[in-house]
Amino acid sequence: MSPRGNRGTDGRDTMAADTPALDTRSDRVRLRDLLYGFTRTQTLHTAVRLGLPDLLAGGPLPAADLAARAGADPDALVRLLRGLAAMGVVAEEDDGRHALTPFGEGLLPTAEGSLHGLASLVGAEYHAAWGRLPDAARDGRPGFDLAFERPLFDYLGAHPEAYDRFNRWMAAATRTTAAAVVEAYDFSPFARVVDVGGGYGALLTAVLRAFPGPAGVLFDLAAVVAAAGPHLEASGVAGRCEVVGGDFFAAVPEGGNAYLLS
Ligand SMILES: C[S@@+](CC[C@H](N)C(=O)[O-])C[C@H]1O[C@@H](n2cnc3c(N)ncnc32)[C@H](O)[C@@H]1O
Image (cartoon, rainbow, N blue to C red; front, side, top):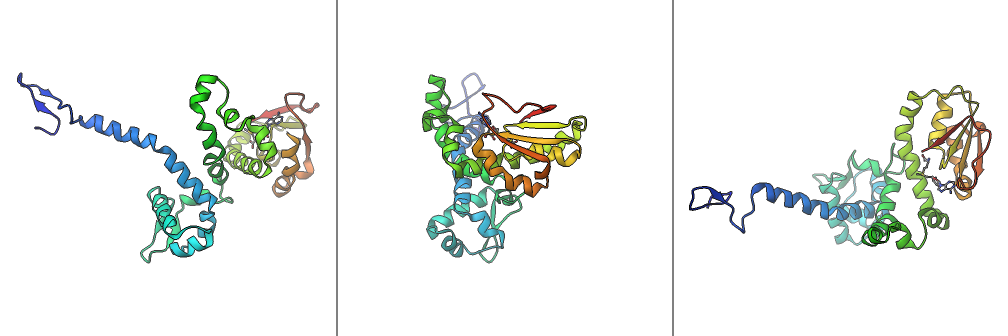
């Protein structure tokens, strides 16, 4: 039998029923890889939940030390580290210690464009929500509402720690694109720029820093703007920025010359 199949009585190749063609085999491998996508999500999520990126930020550690500091089972942690190494997040050094790679540094909360907040959400709340996708597809309601019996922002409002992770992730993601926005658009003609659903103000901050003229209004749900102050302070724009809590389905602050929605 040739690697691709059998030669039939008419001289042409016919595929043996139990020997898939090479293309089919690689398609199955790719499909299997897609089906196992959740394992990568959960491996990254667990690394962040255990604080491994932060623990390794100070330098490589032996697995046993890392397990002790993370409060993890030593054997389980070795298996987790192998999964993280396969994804390039950590690397095992010659002396057996484990190091965070430059790629893995994206999971540090302080990294530029940090994915720390996303990693914490996808493996928990988002994972549960997507688990309801078959029901959502039949029912039409969002999977999040089915899993948590309320919409995302109601849930986050009742879970400040999760809302903080969400807002930090939003801010980190927005910071990666904000420079291009202020480069592409001239905000200098506006006296008052209102950021609607502005979160911790990542986009508004970029606008105010790039253009000294406008004043800013950060508008979001009361629970969010109540926690935004330190972020505005750290960005140096708090003095030029009014903070307003409210529901954008009811009304948005009046008197703006430009309204942002991102
Ligand atoms: C996709 S996030 C965008 C975050 C922000 N623009 C940024 O770039 O970081 C959506 C934002 O809308 C806010 N939001 C959701 N429902 C709202 C409502 N009814 N009224 C005001 N803000 C709301 C959320 O709190 C969240 O900050």
